[in-house]
Length: 126
Image (tube, rainbow, N blue to C red; front, side, top):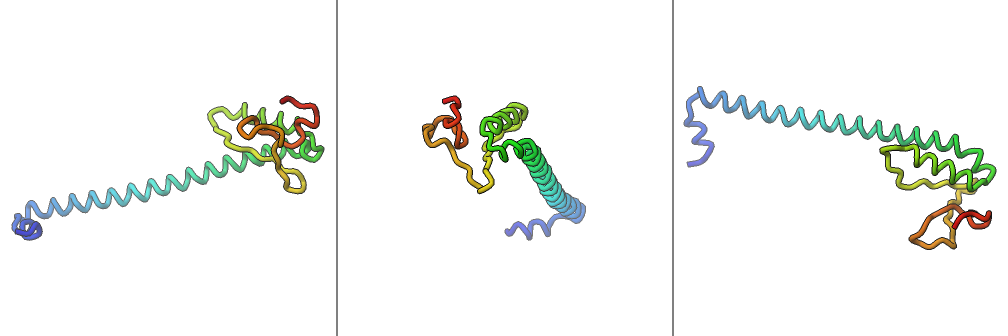
């Protein structure tokens, strides 16, 4: 016997509640999916806004030091920003000069500490 014919043989008092419960489960799944996707979009928007505000704050703090080409002041500002961001993981921060150049210290080992061009020329730490 086919499953559909078994369902047709059930009395109406069982068929109607089964159909209603199946529709309620389907409606619940669709509603949950739409709510979760809306929450995901809101969370992505808030995360983007937080990152944008963090970058704008850093650009205000870094602006004068970058214009003066003060590498150590730039490093100090980035170090303080990293230390002040409790619970947030800063993966990479790149600071470029007016010609959009962002380099790393060529004499530093590939796996070692990374820095901006000019660390060693100014008598900086190794």
